[in-house]
Image (cartoon, rainbow, N blue to C red; front, side):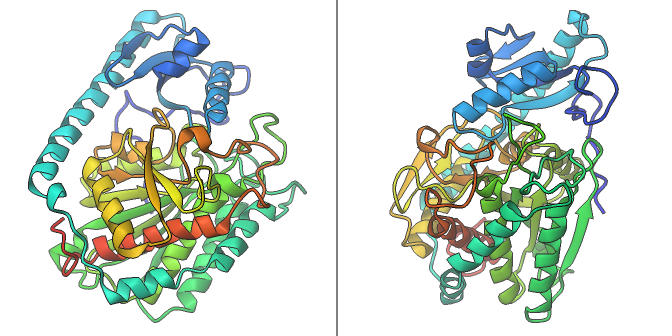
Length: 433
């Protein structure tokens, strides 16, 4: 079981559920947010970095809600990164010092990432050329949209004890029902697959009662150095209705679609022979209000120096806003070499994708940011560019109907299958990372 604890006092995750203080049970917290959001709200940050386009501000529940509302208007899931408890909101010196340390940490990480990516671009990325392999083609082609439809409906249409339609908000009484449904589905997949090692666990978190679901498929030879290397795939399982925090939040697109995509990728990985590298799958808790689950997990992996090769994130996959077959890759807070690699994977394995665009969802817009800020290489394929993303998310209208397409989601499952099986089996791939 992962400890799920923050790695340093300064950067304690503090989107605090159920703690005393604050009108809505949330004490004021120092948060990092996109400077564009802060400028639009007329909020003066206690510190900012215009190169990173990030500002730090002491936020109460009301300001957090405003930031989330702006993100929703822009077709983005998450809006801020809560990094520290502020013991005295009036103590500006304390806030400035914590903000300075938080932003300086981001600068160090970004500098390390840029140096790493320059080396990758010089030595490898320009020469990346995936060699298609028949076993991976077979696994990619085995992805079924009907199964994706079933799993999206399982998460977004199930009525839990409260009688509402699948409000998967991380701090509700039924917050762990969706995770239990995911876990049961995974257990059925494992039981129906060829015998192989597979571990499944529920991860407890400090600042949310919702648990993350974690599956490990160990590398083929667990004693080998290659098997110690990890390829991470993830999607969040919570949903939210920002107009009514206690109202229906079916979250079919955001993010039952990503969770279902991840289930389908696992299904194909279980049907394949064990990979050289270890595959780890996460269904994260609490993304919508501070990326609670992924932040704790990623920081834990960073503190433990886990040898993570790469991380891929799935968040919103069913709305083809830029047209059928057109997807986007998030450019901000992702790794240039992985974006090149995924484009090459698509060319080799996913002919249904006709065009790959670039987009910028802003700072801290999804769980990939947690891993990026912890120092890992990440990639984030998403349904459409920000301007053309689904506008019905975060409301009772986010249901699986004609405006969503499970065929579009199937493209992301195919990308994920290719990513998992190619990157976890580098011998014969044609790439050297």
